[in-house]
Length: 140
View (cartoon, rainbow, N blue to C red):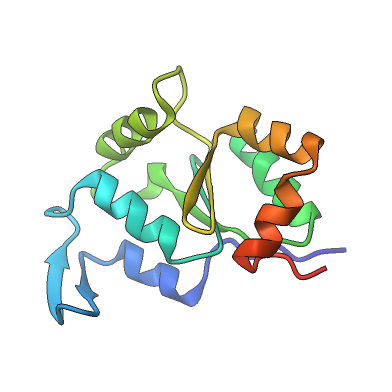
């Protein structure tokens, strides 16, 4: 049995009103940050990041896939974002090249893997495990 932890201690900074950029030593309001920049910052901070909505069944399925593999993804529930979800949804749709649903969106090692269909295709073809190992999310 695997325990799946949705998030890390560093995830708490995402829910604050501002954060500090380490290199610049200055505080940036989340309201000032462009949604694509925020997505990239979040995606690059953890080995596996899933942008999700708490009520989405496909999001739940992709989370269960990773947890079942022994991976502890960082899950960013955009419907619980205090700055609003519309801008993040639009940015995620843009990254995916359009489509009907902006979630789930998976990043591994800071790189966009895609939505549920891309993740499942990678899993079935056998390319998902090497990506997870390379990102340091899976050791075996």
